[in-house]
Amino acid sequence: MQFLDSLCDIARPAPKKIWGLPAVINFFLGGTAAGFYILLGLTEATGDRQSFSAPWGGLLAAALVMSGFASLALEAGRPLRARHLAAHLKRSWMSREAATGLFFVVAAILDSLHGSLIIRCLALAAACTFLSSQGLMLRRCTAVPVWNDPAVPLLFISGGLAGGYALLLFNRCGFFMQQCDISPGVNIIAIACLGLNFAAWAVLLLRRRPGDLQPVGSCLLQPAKVLIVMGIGQFLPIVFLTIAGPWALNSSIRTAAGLLFITAVVILMGSLAQKLWLMRCAQYLCGMRLER
Image 1 (cartoon, helix red, strand yellow):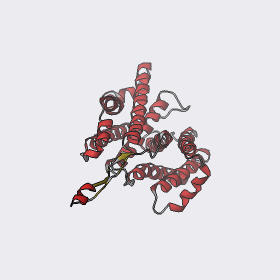
Image 2 (cartoon, helix red, strand yellow):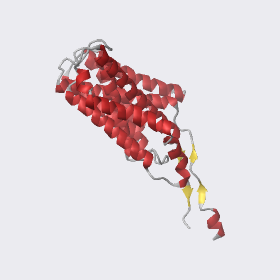
Image 3 (cartoon, helix red, strand yellow):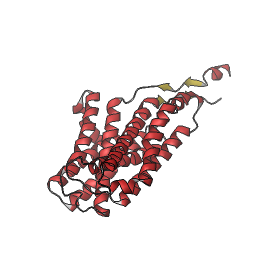
Image 4 (tube, one colour):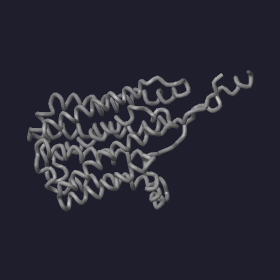
């Protein structure tokens, strides 16, 4: 009995660096690019038929995804080994994320250079799968308890769409050459995504955890982190887009453009901070325990 008591906790959860800043950049740029391309398609479907008439949309999304993959290659140190990802498509969400991301890049570029409804639909399907794969890749990391949470895929999907809407707001302010009009339906979708991201992050923060994982909660619940992610990056954009969004999107005065620009910046800031702290604060491996 004394032997079992002494081995009740074989290994306690301990901090372990699994992914660093390059992975954060990949999740942020890739998710934002996929969300942007999806919302650009919805913008065309719900109002502005000229959204895809210029090549900048697909090319911008493809460039962001490739930039994220390039950051991962720099972290790995041996980018040629990435070819081994293709051997695990049936069981690895990391392999699926890489495959769908590359497929999306090719399809988005082809759609920009040679507009085709079939290619565009394939690119949109790849963007949806790529965005989902990012969240499911962390969700299937069973060795990291905080990542292995049902709220994580919702965080990545809603966060990617919210970040994509921020890029649409930049375009509405005059960036990225040809402007496209943002329909009320897309604005409502963006508000819903921000609200879902807010709720999923709150669930993840307030989830009860064993005592050994309390440092994770303490790190994520620091007032400054909560203020930046939930207050500035989520709540304020929700309030602004709900109350003044329709006016600002249809106004030509500089004040409206400035408010839209600030809204886009804080949405992207909140999304980046969320992914950064989810990576840095939650990297605790599971412990091992014997039952008495």
